[in-house]
Length: 204
Length: 204
Image 1 (cartoon, rainbow over the protein chains, first blue to last red):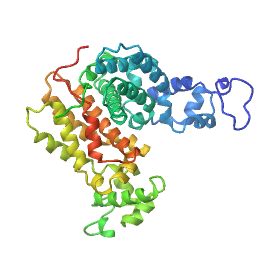
Image 2 (image 1 turned 180 degrees about the vertical axis):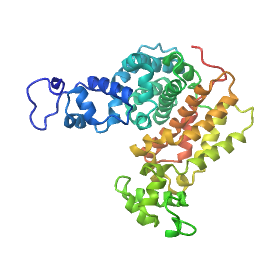
Image 3 (image 1 turned 120 degrees about the horizontal axis):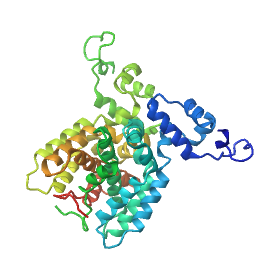
Image 4 (image 1 turned 120 degrees about the vertical axis):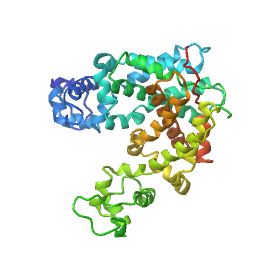
């Protein structure tokens, strides 16, 4: 499997290698699911993927980073869903539906389901880095909210978007910890229905 | 300052020492503010507090844990504010006001202000552990929301409370990154005014 490491001729010293990050993540998720997050070291990931430890640590500064290789795709799904939203839909509904679109088409969630959520969402080291990892996703959502809601500041829009990200995350953790009954997306939907973005700031 | 380490006679092997966690945190915050989070090691903290490295690492499994010694007091302030809230106040206002009470009386925020926020909120390793560290605070808020809102599930209430925690955190980070103009609590208030908890779930 060393072709994963470099698709063409042997790379020169210091030249960035071409790495299939998704393939590394899929293999690593499988190892995490089977053996637990803490038991899997860089050498195990190297063995499962055929990518050298040296190349892996050049691409991922921390093991937990591997959990977040899906964020660019999730951000793209979120952006496309937000763009496809009609302007007359209340902003809270628009945000909730687009967040669900971002979550529901996640290939990891679809293929590995509860195992993936247990590993990625409920593992403290990984969960702890979620907010930082999802920053592009949060900024995408904040941009939409700022465009839809008159008067809101960009800082407040970012705070609200961060709130939606954390609520989504917490809903998936609760779903996983509660025995993963029913559908993960439905559980997220149920939680996000209890958040609203008012057209004007609360005054109470 | 070795009296901080053990108030009474020399502790027996393995006996938990009595440690003034708040005093350790205050000294550590000062070091972080002066030298930056990454530059401060356990030995620096030991030197500044008179507590041995061995005792410190027995009480704090990670350096970032020192940032969260104020969470029990913040949780207590939140609980007291929620209990003092009249039942006829809309739940979103009750939550926002109580969160602000929890934040505004934070002694670290009051004494160190922007420096403390810069270190604690904007430092990635610390910010990454915020959600886990604030779990008791989140559960306190979730319990209140579950008691106030008919129909909401406990999982959804926890998700909403997690959203409020993250929004509060993001507001303080934005305030800090934006040059800390104005008051930190006012910035948090401004952000939380854009979140609402509906009396019934959204149906759109």
